[in-house]
Amino acid sequence: MEENQRLFLMASPLQGHITPLLHLADILFSKGFSITIVHTLFNSPDPASYPHFDFRSISDGLSQTEASTLDAVHLTDLINVRCRNPLRDLLAAALSQCRQRVPCFIADAALHFTQTVCDELKLPRLVLRTGAASSFLVFASFPLLRQKGYLPVQESRLEEPVVDLPPLKVKDLPKFPSQDPEAFYKLVCRFVEECKASSGVIWNTFEELESSALTKLRQDLSVPMYPIGPFHKHCLTGSTSSTSLLTPDKSCMSWLDTQERRSVVYVSFGSIAAISEAEFLEIACGLANSKQPFLWVVRPGLIHGSEWLEPLPSGFLENLGGRGYIVKWAPQEQVLSHPAVGAFWTHNGWNSTLESICEGVPMICMPCFADQKVNAKYASDVWKVGVHLQNKLERGEVEKTIKKLMVGDEVNEIRENAFNLKEKASVCLKQGGSSYNFLDSLVSDIFSLESSTSKAH
Image (tube, rainbow, N blue to C red):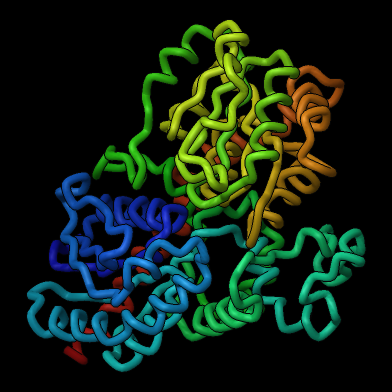
């Protein structure tokens, strides 16, 4: 491969989006491309972790108040408006000064403004979709779902099947707690449209996991598709650094070493989700009553109105006699691959869902918002590698669900399904596997994009 190809990539500045983009950058670096990461000042990645990449920051114009909002839709809307000119200026300068060829720009699907910028500069744009193909199919159906009255979601219709999108029910449709409910709908419709205008979509998934959704999307989007995931399982020549914005507490690994095989319930609800103090207490009591060892990630800010563990009853951990371990953040990939872990209680963000699938760890599914609801439905009802925490978040329900997944009658079947998917996730990356072949196609297609821009600049 020639050494004079440079790719510019830009992530949406949220943890669940930054991680896969940096993994993708590593994959492309391993294929010989030089890499420039364009990022906002808000949630900027640490360049020291990736000395083999070039990092360029652009102004996002966010005030401190705006940057501290928990409304990810509002934040994404602001970035889509305010980063347009700074990105255009940076790319225009880079294209005129760069001695290497710049075949394309790769942007997170949520950054839909990048399509207009690339069109102006006659630079092909590839889209990175950091979520599942199945959830994107639901997003692409938003206008139809609204037309048929499924959206906005009504409490009275939650158990009703969505006829156009089996096996989903109305309660599984994505919704987002936003100050402006209409904003989520508009953002989704816009980024779907701009995907159709792109030169192709890169997916952090694999064909064997989501073939039916990918087949349908190939028809609907009419652009090339590259399902080359799971990203984090590629053998990379680049960084082994953590992509996390939070520092993992690795002491939990020594604790896991002392536990029996498949005995531990690992509990983590990701980097954004928040719960009430009452819900936190129900989870704590349910975990204690289940009599299973547990490793629990309680991120500062997870509990509304609390700094960290203040709501826990006095002597809670001591009374467990070493059966529970709580950290502020965990090295999740290492935890899930540890033989002591028997189940993952997750919010079903796509990174967490895929990491669980890759390690063959069954899931307790408790989605909070957006595409998590679709991911949870597929994990429990389609791939059958998990169980939904149904009904109210209550200690008895928690205890019952944990026991069902750890010692219940269905446990062997779920573990077998999880093991089979783990095998497929491993095989697809090997020579001749689906993701291996799609990555080859992606690399050669990036080369063919290059000619049009080298003439333009």
